[in-house]
Image (cartoon, rainbow, N blue to C red; front, side, top):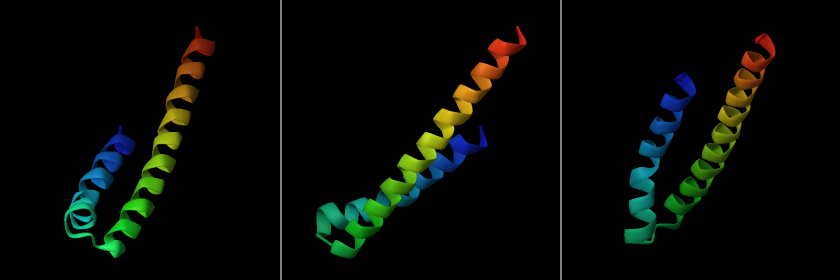
Length: 62
């Protein structure tokens, strides 16, 4: 569940950069958005793996 909190925090931290990029056309903010989205992708993949491992270990225990 801790990973989910980190994921939410990351999304919220990107909000101002999204606004700066889309509303003010700030290209540096666009770079930060792209980096943040890559981090988000990696975190999502880690969470998927964790859930799958937990699911498989529970199935094996039964």
